[in-house]
Length: 369
Image 1 (tube, rainbow, N blue to C red):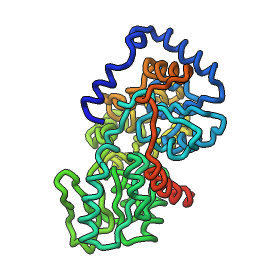
Image 2 (image 1 turned 135 degrees about the vertical axis):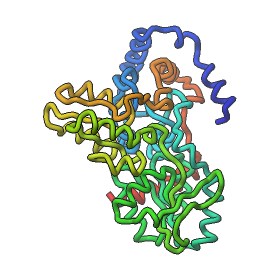
Image 3 (image 1 turned 90 degrees about the horizontal axis):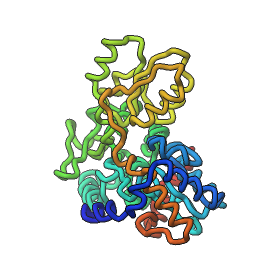
């Protein structure tokens, strides 16, 4: 989608939805949910803001929600409250009879956008010249359907932040080297946990089209795509230092999309699920600084008043693209579905060939569960 397309789409929401009060929008959403019943399924990602998450049928991580959507055999309409790649995954996993919608197509993911197909194909051509057939591509599920298909076509797989270690071990059983897309930090942190040295990792810069490495090519085991999460990269060791200085008894837990030095200095690190599970199991009155998206941190603090929880970054803002989904866009999307005239800019349709190849990558991962 071009910048012009984005601005045209942003201005296309009818004025009536812009001017409605929150109470009016909530009433419209609730009315449509009630009228559609089991024909509608609304998954919501943990990073969604409360005004949206209150209406979702399930909240969770992206792959978990996409798989749950596929299990809703009575649901003809999947309205995914998340970002674009998540809705794509839901479209890949659901049946042809089910239609997937994203209330605002501007809800993208900067990390996923850091690896497009043309860049990846050019990188693969060069890597193949240097390393021959010894490289297997793996992609984080936080990637476009096209990148998932790229990996599926070449024998690779997807992974999540929860199973990244297991999938790296699986990949090394297939090939000598791994191309890890698109988040360099998750790749670096996971590989380091498996005992791979930092000097055995190289970084592919897609803008300069060059491989940055310290040791000879034959020593490289992990090729990290130079991408990152715009939210998690804002957590720093200086913030950890400040927490330690002010409150030595406040434990620090961060997401593995944070930089390597932040993960190394934190008390714990893990996926969104691990962070949630850790907080839920924490002893009363314990103190936590959490290095992940602000909407989730605030929700954890609200739901666990017996704990002291705040963000590791006191100036942290919520994920901007995730927050594109709001009550106005949700009500607009649902109204059109209920009327039988859904707007084309709400529907997510992954091309058939891309679906087939992306599904191969997803199924290879699920087979390791």
